[in-house]
Image 1 (cartoon, rainbow, N blue to C red):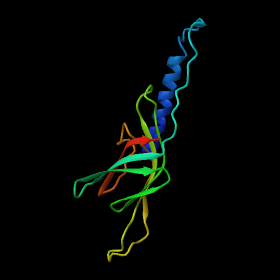
Image 2: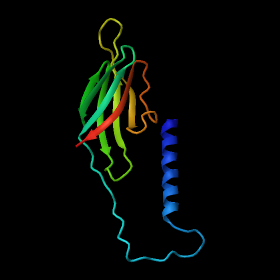
Image 3: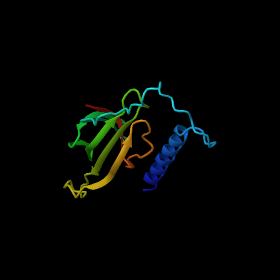
Image 4: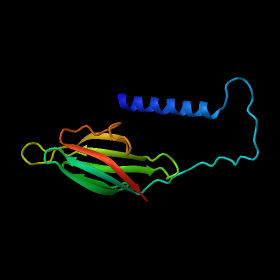
Length: 149
């Protein structure tokens, strides 16, 4: 919860800084309007349909790269990973991959029978900074590698 709040505050602060830099001089004089400058184009990207993740089993040191179609679920060890959304910025912008995932831990009752699964992660992960909003699990680590169309 605190990490999400810190992330939101960092986003708001960076947006305010960018707006202040774009607004020009703050001395009270009006900047001159130049008609020879082309209009600024918005760079956009489209949501992807396949999320590429890497999972690490901390006990066996086994890593696995896997692809999950958005809306589908993949099982990694005792985790059920459901990809809900992913997007990759276009090459003209700062590289970043965004993914919204839900991860549930399938538990057993100690005798081999499956118990009710528990949601251990539900939120956004970022490819450039996996430590910003990580999965906190004693056995597994999962992080975003790519988002493909």
